[in-house]
Length: 359
Image (cartoon, one colour):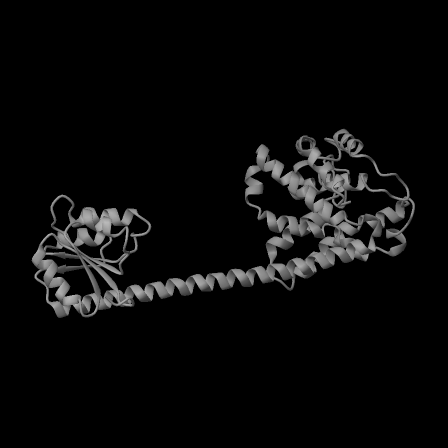
């Protein structure tokens, strides 16, 4: 038998039908004759054919039982099946088709007609496989192109974030650390069932990436304020506070030239609300309680934690334990009390980031 020829299994309990069928097909196909449904399944352990011609009326296991068994197994579910039967009523044909047969040929059959029907169906199956492969390849190409676009987006984002951070040299590594802290809090919320509906609606990959822009507004703050070695006076602090609204403005300008709204919406919330306080005394809008978006309430904790552990010309770096106690002491004033409880429960993971030398 030729190795490149299509394989057809002919299943019928009548030896005459098997002989006639094989003689009709043997010149064009590799034909395996099988006298029962039970023996078909044994054959399928060795050979996966391109098509099965299946008699309906067989003892012990009829054709309907056989096709049900075929459809239950992944490796045989997609083998095209044509029923061969002496019945010619609509009900029998409908039953066979509803079980997954692709055609229904009545016996006695005309060999030329049988050959043509098989040829047509094998062509259709071949085209279906080609289309499936094409769609799979197309999807892979789209995924690959999407990865490239996301990679480019991340590279641009990281460059912008690093540009901002380079202007505020005393906070080197701040952007990377706050992103890592944020991941810990969000994972903790999942594990402890905090704000489940809200975080379930987030694409967290986009969320974490967008968090890098929370301080983007600092790019327009004057050097004499940004690099001042001591504490800012009132006027200077009022100017520094504007980095939140500047940040929102910068992101809105980006929005004008892109359709990537979800990513930028998160970024805008982080930039505009990470200095709001639970009791309403924060800036820029003086939002209070749950009026502050969840993203801003989360960033408030990680931003302050990192600032506390960072050395400044006007203050020493606090220890992890001191920072935890300060945040705990500001629960209900600066910070969302529920999120403070969450923070305390995962604080050891924050400490691990500091200890691993990323600071």
